[in-house]
Image 1 (cartoon, helix red, strand yellow):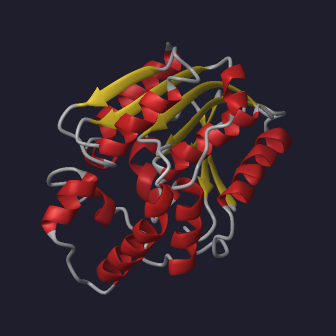
Image 2 (cartoon, one colour):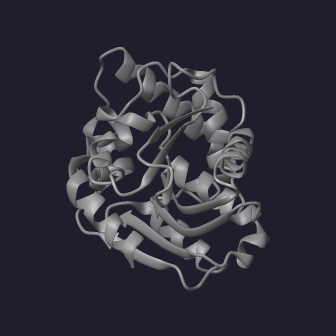
Length: 246
């Protein structure tokens, strides 16, 4: 993995984990200008940057993020924020309880097991990414069904250097993910955002509430997967700051 750091290390820290098939900068660069009062760390997941090797295991990447927090922040992080795949990884990290995280921000966490559909979804995802990499369009009805109506955010945030092996290994973690029972011991505050047009994050927050009933769940009207972050980044940042300051 690689970590990009911005700001004064003496400020409160916030670590972001980006979504699958994107990059840390494609996801979060637009909001950095709003976060000058914080020490910002962008985790670059393996296979999602030219500075990293091909992804082998997201579990190992969670280990690396933990080690980074322990070795560079004395094991204490003010806020952990993740989008999509990154939000699933954030759940894994706070669920382990090896580092102290005061606040957690989850944007469209994917926590619903796909079961027998895991392999078909991996295949479809790889084929879809390959089409985009080759300059071909994905049928609109498919994009609307999966990502939300009229949502081009995922395409616009795509890391074109991603490989099929990286996608498959990421999907194996996300689509088979099991929330650890130990997450019940998490004492921090959790804010969960999801677009009103997103099916799986809605199911995911319902599942997570069984472990942590105090989660604050906010549906963003008329938004699909990644749209709020990508298309309304200024508002996204301001709402996130409100949460950080509360």
